[in-house]
Each structure stands twice: as structure tokens, then as C-alpha cells.
Length: 126
Length: 494
Image (cartoon, rainbow over the protein chains, first blue to last red):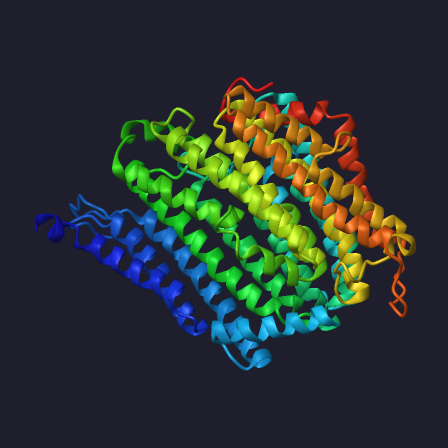
């Protein structure tokens, strides 16, 4: 019980990670896949952010006050970069989904596979 | 100026990217890409020379901050070998790209194409040079994100490029995120991201469960990125439906850089002596490698589309690199580096030659090349020599790869694996023969479009073919460089 109480943030991270990863694998709808991917990435952001946190620690700004504990800013900075990467990935992903929909009229994996296979069979005959 | 070369190596193509996007004229954008990849190639050749003369790792401190506080770029024997491969192939592919891009991509998008092109090259060069675990992730994503866009640009000619690019994005991002999770765990354990610092501090926490978890996440993420069997399903559609120039660049370089990063992390950070590494990772990589060699080769034999055929063969070739890594010895690692170098040349040549056909005929299948041996002999001969090098025929560079690979396996008494490697290489003859049969033994069908060839198209491919033969005959410098690269991680390669 103490393990759960003391490290609840990690359990939350793992839960989110699995929810996101499962959604990416199990869902055939491209938008749902992207949502899963975003949840998956966010869980990693939380992993990094919570590792920098120290009990009673504040932002690492040197002042005259007698503050002794500071949060580690490095993981936070790293995640700032990772968030930017995540936003870019999401943007490219949704742009691709829009193009797929305009071209094929569907964003369901199984329907897409059927269309592609039908086209490839035609191509092989020609 | 000279001491800033490690950073210029990356900055030059990186800053070229927005510049190329601003140049609306397509010839201007291409000219800029050609110039900058040429400069990048020159820089990596100079760096290779500098490193060789120095005989030790050149460390470049970004902003003058020493490691482990700042990020450092490391030019050691390993990165000095891989840099010219990436930038050299990028340069040659850029020469060929002009015709291919004109044929396959809407004129409005050319400037943006070259912007993404330069970005992906900058990202790959960055992954090779950097000595910081998180910096690798950033460069990995720079190269991957632009690669997704480049693959999707194939949609103008082949709309299947869009779902292929999407699946590539999903799996690529999952792979990169796995890598970040692993790096995060390592940071929690050690408080550092510098690769050299990490390897020193890991000794204090080895044999803990968290370290193994980190190793598993990093290895799995990179297996996905390097398309190791059975995590290779994104690769074939992505390479097959991408614009021909992109297929050539990516098939030759993208997965190789991931192989390099895997070697750097596994051997450079965890180290060969890390408890459990040789058993767990070594055995896994070895098994997946040999399985990939067979699955890729057999799938290639059944394929009729040439781009898909050689993409499947890439799975097999990556399997051979994995076998070299999995041998967990200096010779094995040297074999992996030799094959990384050679395979980049062979696949670059093959995809450029096939691209030249696909750009004219709309696609390149066994049907398209029927009787083409007499119509476009120079291009088809390039494909033939490239195919022979893939099998590992003597006098081609592929032979040297296989020689060292089998030597590494025999050193460890893996007789059966050596035999399997030999058999799977011999099986590759089947798909090369299919091409010979279609191109030379069949007559050109009535009414088939007349294929033409011009020096602009076949000279870049032949540059790489000549290099393949050159390094096959005069292999000593390559072997020496690869052994030096292996010695960075495990001593004793010769």
C-alpha cells in the first residue's frame, strides 16, 4: 500500500502509457490511433516531469530566501522539447489523415486495405 | 573554422532547409540542396581524415560547455565512418533527385521537397555525431518527421503513399517514444544524459531491474526504427510508394543510422561486459537477425514490384547487420560496420536505377523491365551488379561483408548460424535471377513503351556501383576503418 501511495505518479504514467499504446494497436480508425499516440506520448511527458519534482522543492531560482530544495529543471526542459516534437508529429499525422480521407473517402484501416488490395490486383492484371 | 566542423556538419543542411523552402524556383532549391549536401560530404571527409590523424575521439563542446554539463558532439572512429556514408549518399542522391523529382512531384512542391530533404539529412547526421542521449531523440524526430512528409509526397503519382506514410508515422513515433522512456529511466538512475558519463555511472546501478527495463525500451524502440524483423512492416510500403529519390535516400541511409545508434547505445553505454547483455540482447538480436534474413529474402523472391522486392531485401540485409551485432564480438561489430557501409552503397545504386525506370514508366515491375536489358543496358547493368553485390559475389563489396560476418560467427563456433547465413545469401540469387530473366532473356513485349536512359540518370547510380566494386577489390581501407570503428566499443578487431 505504501508503494502505491508513495509512487502513485508512476502507476498513473504506466496506466496512461498502456491505454495509449493499446489504442494505437487495437483501433483501426486513424483519428483514434492518433488520439492513442498522443496519450502514449503524454504519459512519457508525465514520467519526465514527475521525476524532476522534489517534495517541498520550488522553481530553481536563486533568491535570498532560505530555500534549500529545488526541483530539477532539466527533465522539464527536455519535455518542453518533447512536447514540441509531439505537436509536430500530431500536426503531420492529422494532415496525412485529411489527405487520406480526400483521396480514399475513408480513414478506417480495414476499408483502406480492401481498396488498396483491389487496386493492386487490377494493377497486376494490366 | 576547422575546429567547428563537427557542428557545421549539421548546421549546414539544417539551415539550408528553411532557405530551400523560401526559394520558390525549383532549380534554385535543387541547386542549394546539391551545394549543401556537397559541402556536408566534404566536411565529413575532412572529419574522417582529422579523426584518423588524431587517432582518438574529437570532442566538440557546444557553446564551450564541457561534458557532462553541456552537449558534446563526438567524432570517433565509428561516427567518422558513418558520417561520409550518410552525407556521400545524400550528395549522390541529390544529383539524381532533380530528374526524378521533376517526373514525380508537382512543380509547386519542389522547394518544400528539398527543404524536407535537407532536414532529414541534417537529422541523420545529427544522430551520428551527438554524444547526448536526449539529443539523439531530437535528431531522430527531425529526420523522421521530414521523412514522413517526404514519403507522403509520393501521393501525386501513387496515392498508396499516404496510408504508408501514416503507418510509418505511427510506428516511427512509437519507436522514438520507447527510446525516450528508456533514456528517461537511465536519467532517473544516473542523473546524466551524456553517453560517456552514462556508461561510467551505470556500473553503480547494474543488475537492477530499472536498468534492464531501460535497456529493453531502448533496444525495442531502436529495433522498430531499424526495421528489424518482425518490426519491419512499416518499411516495405513506405519505400515502395515514396517518390523514387526518397526511396533511394532512405533505403540507403535511414535504417543504417538507426543501426549505428543501436550499436552506440548497446556497446557504448551498456558495454559488452554489462551483466546479462550478451545473453539477453545478443541472443535476441542474433535470432531475429537470422529470421529476418530468411523472411526478407523469401518475401523478395515472391515480389514482382522492383521497389518492394528490394525493400524486402533490405529487411534481409538489416538482418545480417543484426547478426553482426548479435555475435557480441569485435569481429562481429566490424562486420556490421562493413555491411552498413556496403549496403548503403548497393541499395543507393539499386534504388536510383529503379527510380529512373519508375519515373518513366510510372512503376517498375518485372513486367515493366521485360526485355529492357537491350533498351537501357547501362541502367539494367547497374541493377544487375547491385543485385550480385547483395548476394555477396566475389569482387563486389557484398562479398567482404559476408566474409567478415561468417568469420565472426565461426570465431564464436556458431557453425549452424554461419551455414544459415550462407544459405540465405545464396537464396538471394533467386530474385536476382528473376530480374536477369525478365530483362535479358525475355523479348520486349509488343506495344510496350520504349524506355530511354541518359547520363543524368545512370551516372549517379553508377558512381555507387563503381564504389561497390572498388571497395570489393580494394577492401583494405574499408576493413581497417570498420575495425577501428568496432574497436571504439570492443577492443581486438582486426
